Image (cartoon, rainbow, N blue to C red; front, side, top):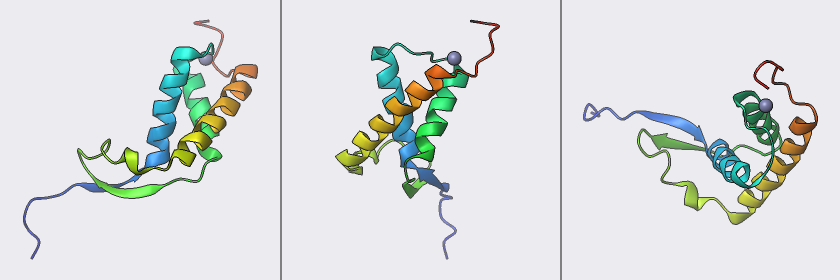
Length: 99
Ligand SMILES: [Zn+2]
């Protein structure tokens, strides 16, 4: 029985990956705060507005399967992020000390 190589498999929400990558792209073009606090606030908002897409993946395979995602999902992610950036920029929750 399956005592061969140990495969580390886990659940992965590909939307989270896509949100992170898309936010990276947007932050190169956009003019908004990208400190860790604002970045995570933006991601949290966007992820709460997009249904997750979970898949079972193996360690090392994390980045390889993103292309299966439909184009529509990328559009949804971008729209949610633009909205999230607006909201977080209006009410940034980073503290004033480094800014
Ligand atoms: Zn910030």
